[in-house]
Image (cartoon, rainbow, N blue to C red):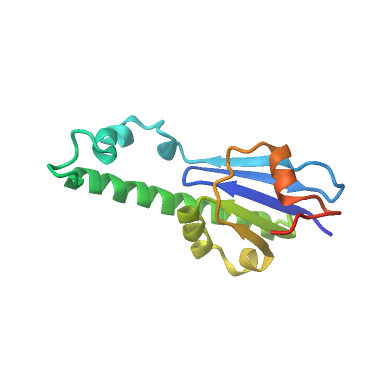
Length: 154
């Protein structure tokens, strides 16, 4: 079996882990981060209270236009980050950095990401899991995805 990548992602962070065929734990080889999605951009966070139900909610609990606009901005950032991750995966695939790919991502982000994967990356995709595993350790991910010799049943 050739080089395998496991990518775990959410709308603002994608971790790339590699399985080299030796049966060792996965090891992280790259990480892509969208600073806007993780609140490092003050302007993006300016409307946070409105989106979460504080003063930005209209009487009766429905979100205000400002909160809805914030959700649209979040969605646009997630779509842009999905394109960035897909481009990184395509470039790595063309460069021969992996032969097979496993994806695990928060459900909404997984849909966005799968939508923008090119044909070559999609052909290398052997598994996709609609679960946010971005905070799991390499050891936990190795246990979840198994080793070359023995993969757990899904």
